[in-house]
Image 1 (cartoon, helix red, strand yellow):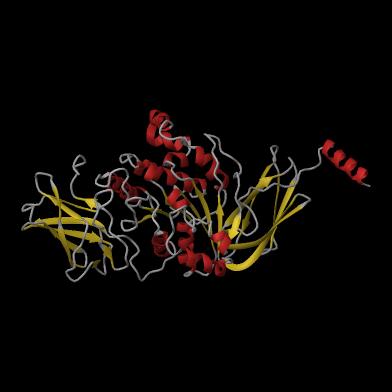
Image 2 (cartoon, rainbow, N blue to C red; image 1 turned 180 degrees about the vertical axis):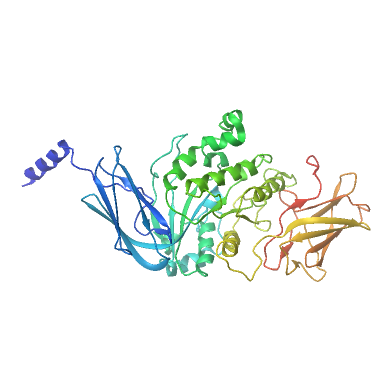
Length: 479
């Protein structure tokens, strides 16, 4: 009998037995698919083979025929999101059944190590309140799901499938390895909506933005010479992560994007805003958004020594991040002025970061209100009688510290361009008065405008969202 079975197996192999349908790894059991749209289902089969897709929420079937290379794709309409488990069956004569599928909103997140940092933290680098949220995560196994794209590289050649990864339900074991920033984002969203949240996260620590963009998009910003020069700046070349870690998932319908990157581009203060705007446009087009309006929320890089705590490379980079807001429609920035460490580039305060991203999404995308969701930002200033009055946006309820308490983080200079620590107080809902006995005739002020300030900047709005670093001068050679 054993000999007969071996003979049958050999005959099948020799005869080129028909291949079973192959799905990309992003399509799997436990996934969340985008609600109220025509979602893409795709894969591989034998050339010319008819493929049928059936779903549990509809009696309609989608059918197609694999092309000469074996590729096939269909679209399936999805209803309003719910927590009811669904199934999808794909068959070319032999069935593949995907189970425990939820319908809701899907967000794609990407970036460097601060987006990658898991709930359990890195070695000797914790995530605050992680134990509490990991232990309670089982309550959300049918509400939050996450797919983590496995690291992979491909230079200028789009990969069809991810190297690895699978959809995980929120349970203590799985949640410990999930991106902390995006898990906290999902937790804050899920408390306010009546459908599941799915996160696809594709990250690689220490990488430049050029790695997450295709060649043509980079050339549009940097030109050919700039593109060639970018290949020498990092061990991971331009396009490699876009081709290997984004291209395989770009057919997966999504609601919007989250981005936490920039430390590796710290010196690119004249081009980063343009690169980020072009990257977002590319991603939106890849996900079928020809109008360039899918939500894009990103994180301001955090204070850190960056080699010299007194230098100004960090706040100058924040300036270019702020500029990108005006270049990217439907975008927002989560401020982290209060969430940094001088000696560690991976701040523990991922709860605040995820919460602030969620605040942007809840107001801008989901239409909630009742709170200020943006960071206070410099609007204008006036100089009179030796004091500078600074006006801020996004502070309708007022600024903290209040009631004549000192505001830390301001510096002030006269015509000699020498900066001194300044005294400052909030004087109205949207105003701060700044002065120093050492500068009788002020010309310029700066706020949080060093890589890491010894006296922690503490200006916030009434919702604990910190003010963004800024300056009123353009003295790049003065620190």
